Image (tube, rainbow, N blue to C red):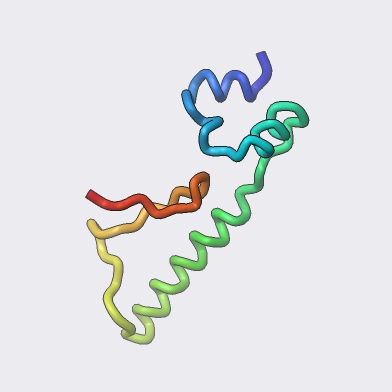
Length: 80
């Protein structure tokens, strides 16, 4: 059993988060997408919040208010 099969067994439905072409590439060539875009987006969101604090711009996103970005589906799920 290769590592992808182990991950798929442990995380049911993970293949649903990938486009078919990306999942095929991951399965056949063991080449996946990078984490870079997720890290870049997170850093950008943090930088915007820091600028809002330093320049006293608008409302801050204080706890417990938050937004969760789903990088696999490219969406921000609604909060309850």
